[in-house]
Image (cartoon, rainbow, N blue to C red; front, side, top):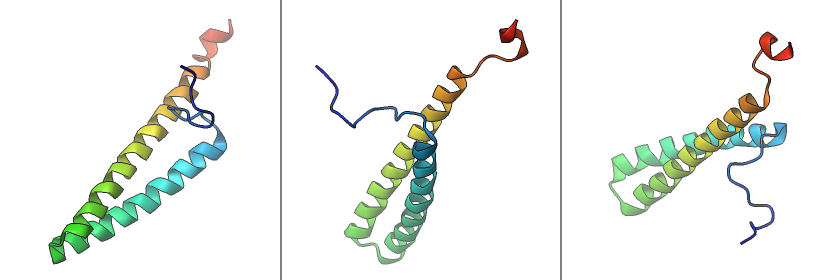
Length: 84
């Protein structure tokens, strides 16, 4: 079964994807912290639900960034010994 166009996992290691992933981690972490504190203070269900989704998004984006880093390191030569 062919993959859907535009959806790849892990994301391709490009400058644009790395930049967007870093921005997403910062935004998601801020949202997670805000709604986590709000949920602790209020004890309501909706802030807990938003906190959970934001935390999951932060973790998934972090994993994507780590996988992109692994792709980049695998594509690089092993060092001076690899040039011989």
